[in-house]
Image (cartoon, each protein chain N blue to C red):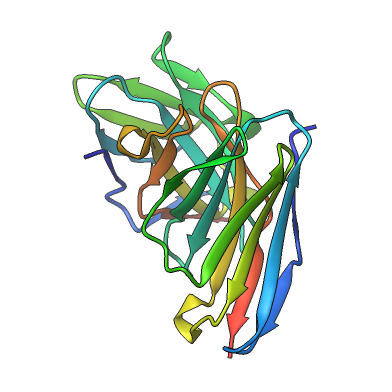
Length: 111
Length: 118
């Protein structure tokens, strides 16, 4: 099973809302990632978790808060977002040779 | 700093013809190179990788890529294009500078739109 799942598929939120994105994989991978992708642009790395510990934070604003409850799950908590944060948020996990397997993404719209 | 360049914003190929999507890279150390494809409103699908070994790498859906160390290139190829190959293609390199506990991120090229005409 080389599947990474993400929920929800679509999310619309206001600037004062609090919401969470969820990601799950059952491939036994020990590194998981959050990327942000704007339309027609490449994904940009946000966070990396390795063995359930945050190892890389690419200077992401504090209104994005990641969490890794266990080796299969990854959350991204959202609070007080701005309209420019609207994007496709992709989760990925790392295989044996550094290849990353991506989920379908959550399309986020901030009003 | 690691970087990847995809010089073409768009490549147009007639169905049945061979296709090539270009990628060049700049890394410090041994390159780990990847190709991904993205269909509209979808996540990225892994196509193939080069880590070490044979310079010609075969991947999913009939795609292959040729690693050329002297030209620092990793071009994606397919002998006979299908209309269903039309999508956005990304070349990526392992980003050693984001390394943390062996969980390096990926640095992506800007992407190339591949359009296969019937």
